[in-house]
Length: 509
Image (cartoon, rainbow, N blue to C red; front, side, top):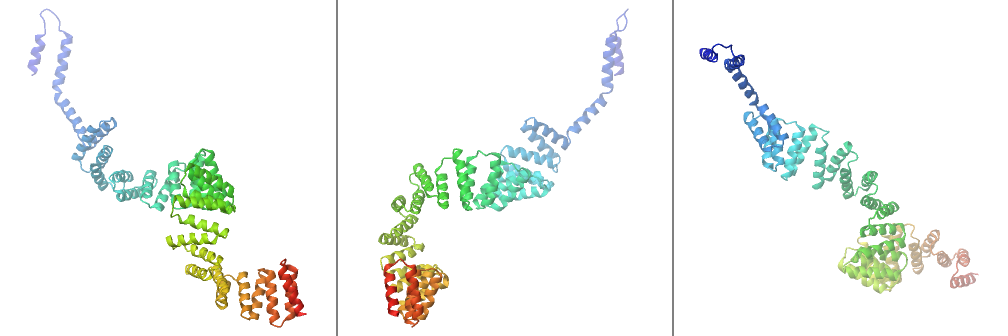
């Protein structure tokens, strides 16, 4: 080799001239390259060995991933795994790549392997949870999110995803806990606040819902839907004026739906502002012709205004829209009862009892109506049926006693008057009627006690004094009797009663 080079050097000499210096330098460079070729080859081989380590191949894959070359990134991650099947980062990045490309089963396999190798990586559990969720393996996803927040309690995204999963499967208390964790870190996160408010609304935790609605309105005071929802919440905690105020704000902001006017009308009903209620139900009916409850509730407003004809018209219209609308029948019964139209009340009560026998108030109302048409035995039967479900109703017991009294069955009447006063010791009417029954049974001492109690309770004062005077008279206590008859003359404006009292005083004298 050396001889060849020398001969080449010699060859480029020319007779009679000096050595060409450029040619010498070129040849020298070639010599150096050849002489150190083994060193250069070793250096090159050494560089290739660095690129071929699993970590280097993985990093090369990350470079491809950052440049958007997913195919080469996948190949690099796969090659790194072939070289070292414990390289967690390679499994993780390949899993994320597969997840993003919609290859979720493949992604899950890589996530599973990564978790085997690194079991306390919160982000890894979060990522695998997302894949579980896409595969509709919700319990597994929730479990992984639990691991994620266990290893990193500040991982807000995990709480958010798990909270919404819990909401979706109806585990609302757990959802509230997770969403509250998110809000601890992001108190002005509107979407999360709304999610939590919706859950409080569903759970009828109205005060908590209102607190969230207020926080939402601090950020967006022009949100008419939030004003509407807050009005509904206020209504359900019986803050009716605040409900109306919230509904009013929603209307100002352009909320113009039938449900709002219906709910505001109901709030006005509760406030006793019946004309405003009528006005709102009018709007509902204009917007939604067949809104049964709007007709019914407007009928209730008219009934409270003592406009019985209008009330009956609305209840009848509600029934026309929905022929089996029992509440419409019942409210029409109340209107008929106010008008003392007992036959029509009996007809409607009978319809209710036939179609919805569990609506026991219909028995009570029909009992009153039967009493009104002097069908006392039928009244007793209906009231007794009512008392099977509501045995502690003093008024129903009193009604039965009164029916027996009118049937001249005084002992039975006294039994029910006793029940009425046992249930309500201030039931003056029961004391008065029982006293009257005792007089007719000639039990004057008992009668005196009952009329005295009726007087103490300011019940039928003039007649109670008169009847007690009668009882005293028959007991031979004529001065006490005379005193009671004189009291009658002082307090009553009933001419017939005055005449009878004066006559009795004359008889006593």
